[in-house]
Length: 418
Image (cartoon, rainbow, N blue to C red; front, side, top):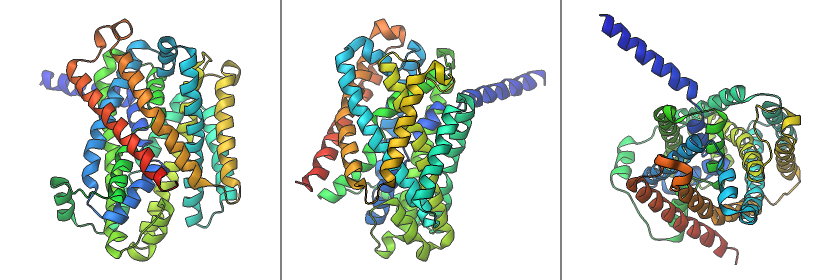
């Protein structure tokens, strides 16, 4: 009896400890489902129904492998990825990489504000009201808050993305057909289908994610004794990411695809759902887009400010006051203001911004991942915590696959504009 009570007490303590360190993995994974990701999944469901659900399996594997290495490196070294790249690759290489990342992330943040504007327009709110108000709220959350408060809000945002489960269930999906699409992957050899496949897998991972993940692990003060809980956090985050993506595809496949409705962006999906699945499904879908966009519009510039300041030796961290990290807060503020202003410009070239930010991401992603896997295998940096052979095989396969997919992702969209 005493042993049973002790066992229960031990389990309870472990659960509480896991909840205490919860955050980096779930938050980083959830940001995958941003405005661009929701658009990709929505278009996939509308065009091909359930046929592309199988792509979420390799997406999950890639996300899990890369984030595990990233978190382990942050815990062992206590340094951000940007810091390690500067120390080992030199200032010139670091400067070139991070100028490109900064430009890409301004474009990505602009896309998130476009998602905020589009989702609120479904509810009849003008972008000239929604974008400035959300921009100010985001700024106060980070600049006037602290890491613990911000992280709790981010976790609430992550959980809120599960509203897509409701939106999908309202559409009354065909579960047997979904099961068949997973058990028997369908492949078509045409440019549109391949482009969507690349988009689904490619949207799972972005260069800035690696820097944010490592910085958040350090900011939380995690140690190797916490590794198994950190790994669980990462697994939960990856699973949640894929679950949300799954239900977005299902929501659009069960309604839009079955009625032959094509869309170009996530806002179109929300509007098209209303006559098919009712106002509730449309409202839930729009709310999910809003949450995802505001979430990513907060994290993206935050991650950018983190890794740029780390790369060039400036103080960084949302637990620091403005005077202690002027460069960090100035950069964060500048990215938010610039991205929001671009959205407010009448007839702003949002499609062009999205394409070119994606192009730069595609070019820089393999560079960042190669730097990362070389660092995580450096014994002078990682000691006994370097990758084992299995980790390296999986890691290099993931990197080679991502290089291949990123190359195709760059080439195929650009061919349309030549």
